[in-house]
Each structure stands twice: as C-alpha cells, then as structure tokens.
Figure 1 (cartoon, rainbow, N blue to C red):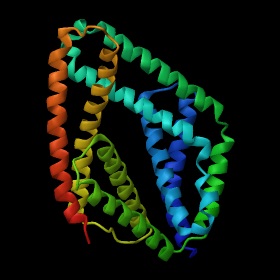
Figure 2 (figure 1 turned 90 degrees about the vertical axis):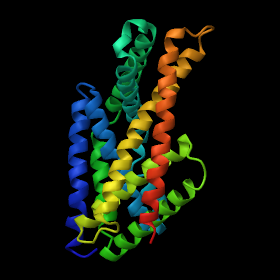
Figure 3 (figure 1 turned 30 degrees about the horizontal axis):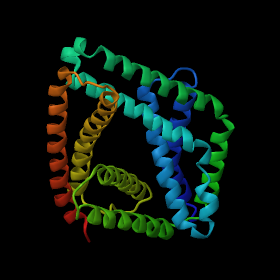
Length: 278
C-alpha cells in the first residue's frame, strides 16, 4: 500500500473502532437500547470493511472472513435490540392512545425486551477486550496490503453487484425479504462511498442519488417498524383461541399503512435504480 493510503483508510476505520470499543465498554456496565443500536451500526461498518478486504486480497478470503467471527453472535443479537425498540415504537404509535385496552400485549413486549437485553448483556460480558485488540491487529495487517487501485476496484465490484441485485429485486413484486436486502445493500453502498471519499477518490453516484438513497432509507425504516409490529402482534394473537375485537382497528390500520409504505418504496426504487445504472 502507498505510504499515504494506509493512514487515510485506517483513519475511517479508527473512528468506527474507537467509538465501537467505547460503546462496548459502556454497555458492559449497563445495557441501553440507543447505545446498543449505535454499536450495531459500527459492527455493520466492520462487516462492510471486511468485505472490501476480502475483495482486495481474494487469495486470503478465508482468513479475512474470520476476522469478525468473535462478534458475529453479538452483532446478530444487537439487531434484536433494535427490533424490540422498533416494536415498542410501533406500540406507542398505534396503541398508546388506548393502551389500557392492551395490557397483555404491553406486558409481552416488556417481557421480550428483558429477555433480549439479558441475552445481549451476557454476550458482551463473555467477549474479552482482547478480542477488540485482535480485531484491530488483523484489520491493520490486511489494510497494509491495499493500493488505491485495489481499493477502487474492490469497491466498484461490490457496488456493481449491489446495483445488479437492485435491478433484479425490483423486477418482481417487492416482498419483505427483498426490501430488507435492498435496505442492507443501500447501507453498504453508502459506507463504501464514504470510504472512497476518505481516500481521495470521487463518489460514484451524484449528490442527488445519495439524497434519494437517504429518503428511501427513511421510508424503509418506517416500513420495517410497521412490518415488525405486524409480525410480533400477529404472533401474539395467533396463540389466542379468540381474537378480541379491540385489536381489529389496529390491525386494519397497520395493514393499510404497510400497503402504502410498500407502494412508496416500490416507486422510489424504480426511480432511484434507473439513476444508479451506468
């Protein structure tokens, strides 16, 4: 790697690493949803960065793919913290005005939250700080071997694959899985674009495209909250022999909003992905 490139690309990684490690240490004292969600976003960055290293050193892909393995289970469970937070948000949006009607469901959410938090806290305590030092050492080692050209090539390959998937995904009716995959793909594109800028490369997409990505991402978060509440509430009601009529207005509104949000996402995808095509 050129002597000037290593500090540049590691500077981006360092910011996420320092913030992620500090959050990890804070959460080992007390678990909080906001800080858990922030830690998940840093682990998301590590995951994308490691994909970039795998492309740049394809002959060492197997070793590089193992770098984040000590954090894989934690990463997955931090996502559950975000999901239960989304379900709580949904409860406040759709049911809080009449919360006295739904004490059993509110109690279930609280119980699920406690279980998820307990699992994550135990996971954090089970990971020694040495694993963070190992992570940094491995990242540093493989980042040394990258040139501006290899980084540029690797980023272009990953982004092109994501754009191809976006095109494929919107050719059929958007289902929950496809929307989730597109959302993850757009977050990946955004991270890779920031890495490009940090090492002096130009952004692949225009400012207008990035504004559209941000707007689509916001709608997708709203869709995700709606989707999670529908699934969670549906599972809760599915265990009952008789479903109380008090839930019907909530379910009707949730399904109506789900349909509207899905249509909005579909339209935004069609518009955005045409602009992302070369």
